[in-house]
Image 1 (cartoon, rainbow, N blue to C red):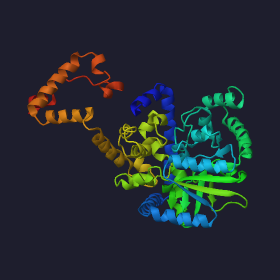
Image 2: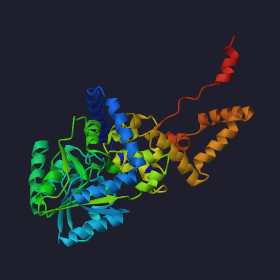
Image 3: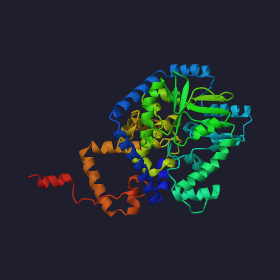
Image 4: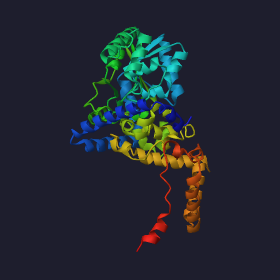
Length: 452
């Protein structure tokens, strides 16, 4: 299914679509207000972008430096070329410790690798401990947003879900009550788990440590109670020095939700006595993207979700319309690099307004990359209906007589054609639009009569 088809499904409930749009714009507005309180905001963005440029130019060196320091800190370092290898590494660690139940904090990488279904297939009970992630997990859905996983759901839907799964009071939609019920439910899972899995927001090459950012403290709760901590990390999450964290931590939360800083920014440098700490470094197409000169800047992404909150297409079509773990504008430039055929419609799910690039904290040229992917997709598809229509238009516009005749014919046809033909499936543009009334004469004829 293509993005337009999936977007149509989302828009079948216009009230919910409107609510989704307004809610995400509210988050975007918070981002704007928060950033205005930082006089050096643009300097921070420039600095973050330059640090990431340096990382991408020296990625191999920083990764090896991180590995060396991490091993010196008694961290077990693993390398995975793709999702399958990542999942096998995690499974082997669990099997070594005879672990059949884990707690996991929010990790886009593990979603990308489809770790949950893989582990469940091998008899491991996986519990996502981020509240939004747990909600969508109970619904057997993937996250619809990388920062706000359950943003597509309203309070009533969550209340109904908790009544069914957690035996809460039917019809009680009080957020504090529902949150308390989730906390009680998850506390048992934390206490029982021998292994905790987290993502990684930033890994420091200089020290061999990594940082996990959460607002709920669930990553800390899981890690400190478990005997084994497995951190799953995309190789692009490296930064050179610890002092660089100050730049990114000031940008991340403000760009994501408008708050000054994430509530918990937890540093992991070495395991506690008697415990194990593992880091899995995952490629899964990242080096291929790095080799694409036009698209390598997409690897600067720090997963703040700001581009989604501002995107007029994402806000009005929902995260599931993208068919990708990372939806929205950033997903639309990352996903075609993984499978250009499967994700061929995503770069066209954009107005190219540039708002995504304007809010990106690391200044990724997202809208330009969307345009470049359109060219790549057109080349890969050969002659298609869009290309053919442009060739026909070129022929018509380059010959004055053909232009005049086609204009006259179309004006006449539009006056007599029934809507069932004028707005048929062939004309996707007219699906939710109506053409203006056809003028009685052309501007050229009008000008001839009135130019004096």
